[in-house]
Image 1 (cartoon, rainbow over the protein chains, first blue to last red):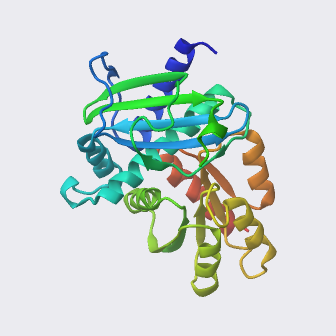
Image 2 (image 1 turned 90 degrees about the horizontal axis):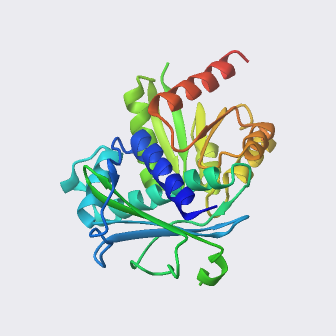
Length: 153
Length: 129
C-alpha cells in the first residue's frame, strides 16, 4: 500500500469518525506549518495482527477540550483533564479501528488500550501521518506499521 | 415501558456518550447502570434487574466475548438481550458474537440513530420471544 493510499484512508476514517460521533468534520489537510507541538495531547495504541503496528492522534489541549465537550455533551469549563484525555483516547481507538478495517477488511486485530503519552514517543518512522483542520482546531493522526514489538514496555 | 440498561465499556467517555445517545433517542430508559469490564458487569447483573446489556468487546480483566459466554452459561442471565458495540467490523467477529448469543452488533463509529434502531430491534426480538 502506497503512502498516498494510506493518506486517503486516514482522511476517510477521520471524516467517518468525526462526523458520526464528534459532530464535526475535517475541512481538509493542514499546511506544513501546522506541526504537532510538545504541549499537544497525544494518545496512542498498539495493534497486533497482519500487519501489526502503532496508531496515534495528537491535538492541542484546547482542541481536545472542544471535541471532548461535544462528545460528552458538557460545557468545556466543566471538563476535567482526565475526561478530555479519555475522549482523545477513545478518538484514537475508533480511528484506529476504522483505519485497520480499511487497510485489511477481514483481518481481526487485537488493539491495546489507548494511552496518553508524550508527543513523539514511539514514533520512529510513521508510514503515514496527516494533520486535519477542524472547526475545533487541528488534529494530527499517524500510523506506524510493523513496529509494535519494539514499542512494548 | 422504561428499560433498565447496563453499559459495559472500559472507556468512561464511551459509556457517557452511549448514555447521552440513549437519553436523546426518545427510548424510555429507566436506570442506566455501568461497568468497566465483563467481571464488573456480571457483579451488577447478580444484584440489579437489567432489561438489556450493551457491551464492548476489547476490555481488560474480562472481555466482551468471555462476558457473553458467562451470561449464556448462567440460567438466570441468558434471557437478557445483549447488543455488542465494538470497533471490530470483521464478519468473523460479528458472526462469533452472534453465535455466542448476542442479539445484535453495532460497529463504532456509529450514528446515534443506528444505535437506537439496533437497540429497538434487540428489545423487540426479545419481546417477540
